Length: 571
Image (cartoon, rainbow, N blue to C red; front, top):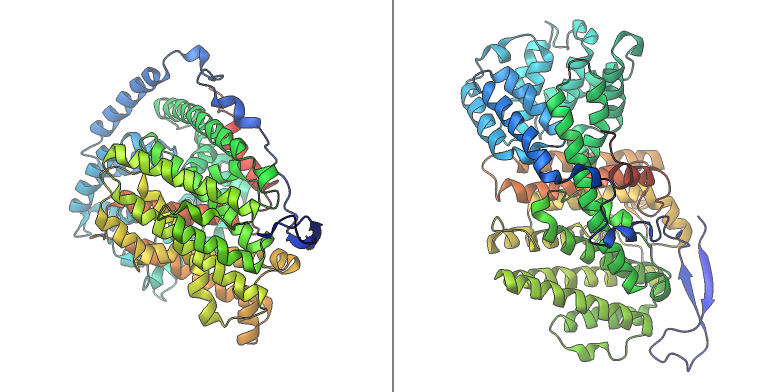
């Protein structure tokens, strides 16, 4: 999309006294959802479940049946692992997290010497499944278990090519690789090559669809609710599916969808009250897309407050990004940056002198953080607000520095570019903010960890920045934007665009290895905290592979929103 420049009345501090100024516009398309979800804001809005009565009670019976299933296979490790895998894929893991954690711990103890028949055996699917589930859980299972599938020349055996289910399981296991797992690098290349060339007529329709989906979206990098929505119909096609698991998965998905609709309705009402289209017409109107993004980080009911805080902060941050990135003037940026620094000390006088559009934004920002502070005070967790505010101040300072580079025509070196751009991508702010509304699992130590130089947050920032640069640099250069890592690599290392993008993708791969390593025991913070950061990286993979689907939200992302928040699963 080409850069659009329009002349509008001045929004300078001396508004109304000077001539019109020419401001940039990125030409973002308007919201494709409008007020669609506003109808769900009403407390009485429950359209899909009128005939179900008390849905919670309907869920309890199949949940009890699944717990019995877990108990019945407690002494059968292979069956237990297969059941756990199905529960996870169907999106109902959060109901049985404690039970499954205990079972996986017991399985790890019995497999710690790697001498169980399932590890010694030649079942590629089972060995890969054990490896993936235990690595996922943080147990540092050696990747050497896959050496048994190599021939005398050190290559993976050609006899494995016909085992499509085993290759798919191996492919997914490889996504848990860490630095030094060289055999998993070989295995991933091997599995990918043959999965891409399978004869779909020789495997079941369900398995062929699973392979096709996995090649586009590996399980490790997928958002749990979206992956469940894709998997449930495929599971139903499998003749060996369990009716209890299927019924619970459908009921739980539809009930969760109804709850998310209500949350989205309230968020839409909040967004509408801000009147973005009138007060900030230059900004991306993407509240539904942001809700999808942040619900990928939190979907469990226990984290409803944390999710509400996160979506609101990130929504206002998106407007702030567009103020610095698109609409504002250089002299105005100093004002808003200083106002945020002072305003979070509750110096409301900092509002004086701001242009009208910035004043409107600033009032919304202060009001939101005041509401968050009141909520935290009720919970006895007011200390968390300090960290939240500091993260926002840091974000504004980084936006300001980036804007100064652009408006003074300064081209940074890659060494200068990356540290700043890891901040401007917003994932540091998002990671800290994601902790604010969580329960007792979060402590002051957790906030110190998140705001420090922790590897998993830096990995999420790296994934975010590099994937954004790959997917959006053409659009951003056309509309007028700071150079990206792609352009800098091309310039500094005399690379072609394809070579630069290939080099950047290596950085993304390494960041995923860092992420996987952070889950290995002992962890720096509890797993639920690490999972939030992992989910940020997953969301980036879903939303920025091939294109910036947040900015250009009318195609693939529209389909995702429809799957999760519009279309219930047929019962």
